[in-house]
Length: 199
Length: 199
Image (cartoon, rainbow over all chains, first blue to last red; front, side, top):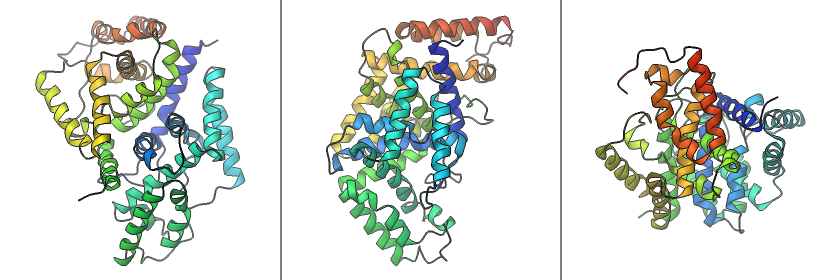
C-alpha cells in the first residue's frame, strides 16, 4: 500500500501528461500549439495581475487554486475550443477524469482539489467567474497578437467571439473595453473576412 | 504612452517566450525537453501538496507567488542545470533580465514581482527555502521515474545528486528520506554506472 507521500508523487508525475495535451492556440512567436500545462501557468499570472480590475472583491488565492487545477481532467478527455458547446457526455467524461486523477492523491488532498475543480466548473462564486473570464481572455490576447491564428484556423466569426467572451466584460469591464477596441480595429483591417465555419 | 492595462497585456504576451526556453529534463513519457512555463505550473502544485510536510510554518500563497515568477528571467538568459554553479556574471545577467521583463508592467506590479523574484534568489525566508527545495525536487522525481534521463545525459554522479539536493532534506525531511531510498535503489541497479562528466 502506498504512503501518502508516494501518492502525491504518483499524482505529480501523472500531471506530466498534461504537457502533451494541446490547445488550439499557438504562443505568440512560436510555430506550435500550446499545451495545457504552460497555459495553466500563464493564466495564474494573468489573474494575479488583473485582479485589481475585477468589479467584485476576490480571494485571489482561491482564484489561483482554481486555475492551477481547472484543466487537469483534460489529461483524459483532451482540449475543446471554447467556441464549441460543452454537452452532457463531455461534462460527464470530465467529471470521471477528475475523479480518477485527483483520486491518485491522499483522500483529503483529493477532496480539496476536486472541490476546487468543481467550483470552477459550477461558476457560481466570484472567484470561479473571474478565473473563467481569465481563461477566456488569454486566447483572445494570443489571437489579437497572433493575427487571429486560432480564430482563422477554426473560422470563428467576430460575432461569436464577442458573444462567447462577453463574460470577460461581466467581471473586468475595463479589460473587455480594450478587447472590444482591438476586435473593432482587426475587423476594419479585414481579419474576419474568412468564410465562417461550423464551430 | 501605454495604459497600465496595455502594459499588463504586453507583459503577459512577453511571457509566451518562456514556453520556448527548454530545461534539461524530459517530462515522464514524453520524448522532448520540458519548458520553463510548464515546469513553473507543476512546481506550484507540488508545493501546495507538500506544504504540510514542511518542517516550518509556511505562507503557501507567497511560496506560490515565488514559484510563478522564479524562472521568468530565463526568457533572456536561458536555463542552467542545477549541477552547475551560478557565477556572478550569470547572476548579474538574471537580475538585468528580471528588471527588463518585470519593467514592462505598471510600476507597482513590477516592484511586486521583482521583490518576489529577489526573495526567491536570496533564499533567506522559509518560503524561499521551501520553493527552492520544491524546484530541486521536481527534476529529481522526473529522473527517478525516467531512468535518470537528465542525470545520464549530463553524467551527474550520485554523490553530486545527493549533495546538490540535500536542501530538500532541510525543509522536507520525509520527502528527502523517500528520495534517498530511491537513489539507493537506483544505485544498486547500476543507474549511475556511467562515466562522470565535468558538470
